Length: 68
Image (cartoon, rainbow, N blue to C red; front, side):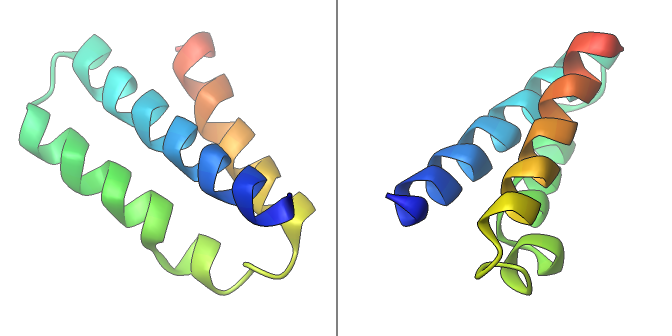
């Protein structure tokens, strides 16, 4: 279950980051690069064994989209 939660959280954060970029009127290519960099980048990769930290990073991006 924790593996599915990390994957789902990273996917939702990527989608939220894409929506954040589109809401700001920025280019879709930049949104896609940023989403991949966040979902598969160092902040998630180095903390993959810490489920709570990875999910809190994902929730941060989702909150950023809704608060912006």
